[in-house]
Image (cartoon, rainbow, N blue to C red):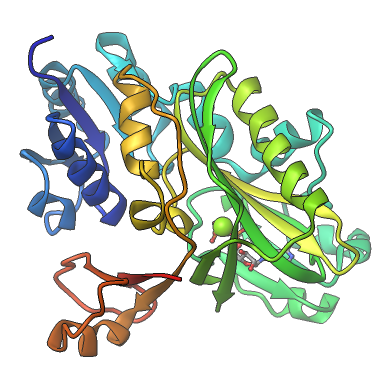
Length: 348
Ligand code: ADP
Ligand code: MG
């Protein structure tokens, strides 16, 4: 086989890590991103800076790539569809269309008879008068949300009345789950009933942003098995190719709920770089490029800490790490509040 060129849409830290994994496999990467400062340009072979609606640039990108994938889900369906006419896009654009919309995503999960929290579409402010049943809850934008952005906790109808938001953007109201734990399951599907699945990861959020992840998750055997089973059901139903992450809630009665699906590699899986023989990134690339599937082996338990905003600073200055600690700096140009700047994985 000649040289393989992988096109990746999106140039954040996930794109960077995909590029690093590709390099290991001797695959060339082309990043397409609408951010001129995209950190992944430090790690890719070629960088195209343009808008996601710039069809001319999109086609140029597709022509340079043998296969195209993406590092985040908020890409216009049309863009993925245009590329898919020229080159294979994995995961398929139709999958992304379901998952990038919170209502379509939750409807999809419920059709598989997998539990989610109760949810309802909210189209106008007056709707709330009939929605007391869903309180306390969280109002979320149906599209474009991440790291808790576009989310509003609603305890009472009064909170709702005081909100100054434009409802035409599309919102859903979700009943608050009384959380005991959050876990995620990462799975890489290579084709019909062919997949590699990582052990459930336990996640802790602060201000709705992921702060800590660790394996093993402290969960009972039933939840351990069920969460993996549900991840397989979802991946099979979507006929998914690549790495996918399912975020789950576990409530105080040990009920499992699907929170959301990420049709991509996931922040909670950063620890797979050091804790497994094959990372979620390498597995994603192996699947979308039709490379050989290697049996997954856990090397060590691990925990990961996200460095958010200024938290990166001391680590940039002091690199005194033990041989069990791995520091990653995403090389983002600007430190911003609530921005994920890097992480540390520790083998335990
Ligand atoms: P994002 O797209 O920003 O990751 P999520 O829906 O995953 O959005 O919400 C972020 C975090 O907010 C969750 O991981 C969880 O900690 C909290 N959260 C969101 N929805 C609920 C809910 N219905 N019940 C309890 N906690 C929730
Ligand atoms: Mg989430």
